[in-house]
Length: 371
Image 1 (cartoon, rainbow, N blue to C red):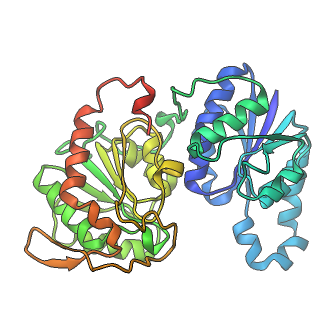
Image 2: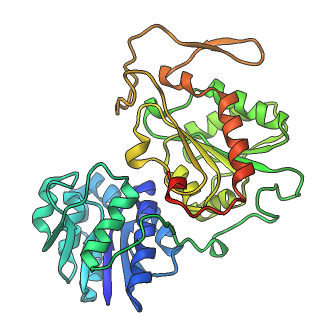
Image 3: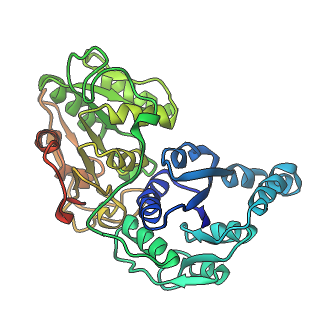
């Protein structure tokens, strides 16, 4: 059997699809899988040994000059690639009109979510099979259910396998959880995210780096944009045990994460990658809801705010209450912005992470450990 997955973006959503791939190849011997994905994330499907062929699409780039690209050769070549192979089934795992349209370009029947289970109900008009999946379930489990219903198998919801072959990604030298010189365990701080409302306050990142150093950890700060690089430099300034990583590929970042002892993240795609690699991770949520699309896996903890306005699901903070302040270890007081992150101060974040790192060696088999 030969299937095509259409899951083009974003980083976290693509990672959420990997357990469904593991389920499918376990249930159907000899299954061949091709995958359509945005060019920026083309590395991710290749990490799963069951993925045979990756077909890249560039909708994000094409729509900037759509009138030129529609008539150009790049779009035509992409459509020709999709039509080269007759598929037994095409699964639209994205659930958007754009992904449904892409699915229609391929040769084969299309399966997707029913209109009452999907983000954009109009997308279901394109499908030959429509499957209902509870909207209240986590995104990982929703995709797993879609694949199981589309391909006709059952799966163990209590077990989870992202299928990433760690040996095939770029990894720094040295044992897991240490720096390359083996001197100290390493933590990764994933501070970069998109919405303003999802940013943990920069003074908290600085304080956390200081506390981690004092506790005997090295800290690494990755970045993907110039703003993120500038923040990383400010957080690391004057702290000998804190390093700003160079800009690197997703595979190289995956290697750094796989080699770390633990991770602190905001609501960001790299946090989902840390979960997929089974790294002990504390993820800090304020404006967004971790129960639907938060980090999912073993050794995961999501911290959320108790403010009545959280999660607001807004790009910018609209908090109207009294300013919430905190005092750092140097005695400096500051107003916590966004206010919802006052519930997750650095001392508590590091305490949670240290506990999780110490427990990470314990075998995990029960569904209660999946979050």
